[in-house]
Length: 417
Image (cartoon, rainbow, N blue to C red):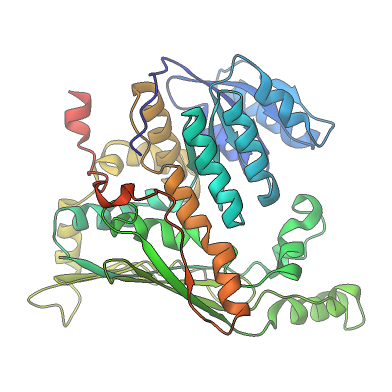
């Protein structure tokens, strides 16, 4: 924990998986101290688009790897790369990250970092063995309201944070059934074979950071329950016909999953997943403390003692948000909004990652966070399949959480003076 590696004057990067990774190429090419060395994808159109983006940014073309399912191994084996940016489908997250670290590269990986507890341990063990960074790219930790509530929590404004809620509620019925979309339709195939919460980290990550998980507290056990499945079948019937193979297929993933996690200190987190219902996008993000409450969806609101029976009035809310704006968003927020990437949080995440690597600093999210947040995928499924009985959550820090301190709020004035 708190791993520091030698500073890199320039971070030489390979991006593998240019569907979601295409946006990363655009963002990284606008961050000082980066060089995109290699691009890897099965689709030539994605590679061409990324090369055009590099040219537009005044960057040289990258070396291209394509045409085979294991071209990524050649990328990891190069000796002129520091960072593997892994934006591939879920089943490739762990193999690429492990191979990258074993070849001396820092590895960052899309969410979730792993799908099984065994693979979570593999990431932890390999990161420790190689002393390479392994970070999950949980961009929601860098959204503006989430950063502000993190700052408020660190400064004690909300008191002791004893309960939090997060979610990934996103209507993906059309995306899952899109035959021209993701390679091998991996999202849909996963929904056929698994239940539980397959995508917990968007809602979970920001709340876990605020609550000091792995740094003063840790997950103890969870219980999870799911509804029956309706959405994918109904969508398939309406889109392809009731007699279509898509409509007759069996989908195991329940429409709505609720996973309740209890920590060693007696705090709780509720994590919700629903990607197959006709509902507006929602990550929930609720923070309950002994002095106040914050909620993001459908509208950002804060309530504070001694008047916590009602939310702050608009002018009071605006003042609180300005007072406790996180130094990261204050420093880089406007450029982040201009560059884009889910409203700017992707750029803040990438900028902060590169800054830490260039300055030899620990990363805001480490391999223990990646493992702890991602293991909910398999553990929630075990609980659902066992009548929602509780399931223990492993301590991936091997006890180090007891003496670890929550990440401080970064003071950019101090850093840059």
